[in-house]
Length: 190
Image (tube, rainbow, N blue to C red; front, top):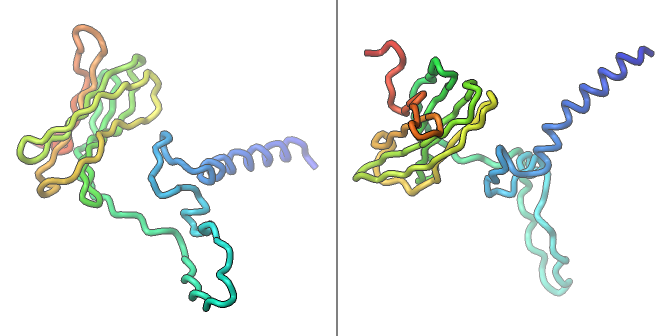
């Protein structure tokens, strides 16, 4: 057999197994656990809760629980996002308001190709003057990232919320490179 072909095949197997190993390990993106115990086996319904010792023979046995088929149903997350924007300075972003299970939060997806670290501030504004704000450090690499506010109990309709992310140079002048909003008009819209 051709050794090069065997080496390529082994490399492909390793690359394909890495995401599976990460999924089995548990926590999701950026180490943020989803609070459901995570992991591929749980998601696919292949793991079972720990079993206790059987009941004594004198007691009638409890009926067996129905077997789960397929992955657990995930709660629906609704989002309202502005357009994907980019600046001539090398920053791309899209900002959204997300709503799920009676909670609202903001998230900005970004990519920084400016060649320098940046500061980002994400602000979510809601009804009755409610505001949540978080600062995020944006690395100098061009890997995609996200900045997200904490989830807060919703107050009012989802349409009454908006989010704005501002990306700036972290110095005394704080030059603003890009502002992205959940309700921004698409480029070219009046």
